[in-house]
Figure 1 (tube, rainbow, N blue to C red):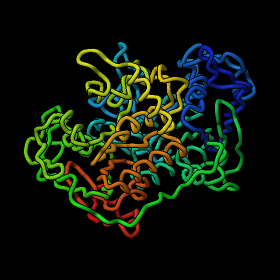
Figure 2 (cartoon, helix red, strand yellow):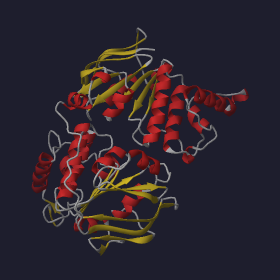
Figure 3 (tube, rainbow, N blue to C red):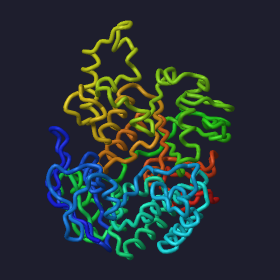
Figure 4 (tube, rainbow, N blue to C red):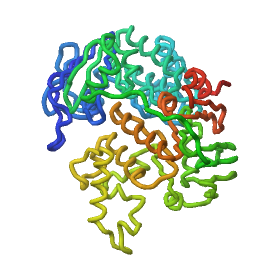
Length: 503
């Protein structure tokens, strides 16, 4: 099955998200789709999936022009999308999730789960997606949950599969397994559209690549004839540095000391189990691990967002175990949260308002109950310029910025002040190579100025490139530690520790 987008244009008011885009996805090949944050990739795929109707242009499937009134039409036409954030019901079984919405029925209109299980097994054996149909989603590791998402679209007879940042939460070993699945789907004649910011993955898995910039296709071709640097320059319109510049590691006094910390999930289960770690001045400590192994709860406890059950947290030698987030902020702790829209921003607020979310009460921006908006706006403009936050005005809503600019807004708010400790959780998740380069440079600048920097990321390459030391979390505990001050440790060894194997 071949799909062709011809002259697709999509506008949102005065903003042109896609402009005269031509794109072809052929059966039996993997098309890599690259682009900066805000380049129009998601909009284009939403047009193909029937979520948006194009203002101009047409969709052609196997030589026939089609028009989708909604996602159901796209699914019926054989188009399926595996989203970056899984859309599964945790308490349902694999089979129940796969058939949700298209349930097979037996006599008297009863749900035929036996047929569902058999179909799941059949599809799994065909494409190397073996999963127990009766297993509950909440009991499965992330890599297996992704298999269930793929089974869902295949169950609906998808012949065009769109993968949106599919390796964002996988270990290196799970990535290799996933690539085997993608190749099996391709070899069966499926058309694969592979959206990612990881250029090395495009070079490894894609048969052809197309690059979007500012809503238009600006380049592409055979990735085998292109280097990572060439792809990055096409994508962002300028040369990009991939190597992080690091000065020699000269650790100072401890900035952060965590001793025997135990933290609970909202459900009452143990999320962090007796964790101890230290971050020194002028050091980057990286926390590696597959998402869901207690890293989030650990960061929330350190920043004061979740109480500690046992253990102590010291900041510059002072016990802050029971201190409020505001008190920790005032002491010089910066926090870049992992979910920028849910935890880092109020998307309906302006850029200026978001710039002072954690300091609006200071004498600099307020006089008692009255805000000094002139001071706020002036400060926001300075911060936006210093941290390259690309916004038409500081009065624009933060929710209208691209993901990369939203993240740079948060980084500007946190680092445009005197800091001693920077807590960065998933600091570049979902960002393009240009924005990643910028965020990394700012974190390393904080390190060079004597801050302690704690980075938590599910992107192992990010941890390996930034950290002086690496600890690996698995099921709430630190299971391994690696010295990365002289050279990055063996990636396979770290990946095995992330999967729970002894290093």
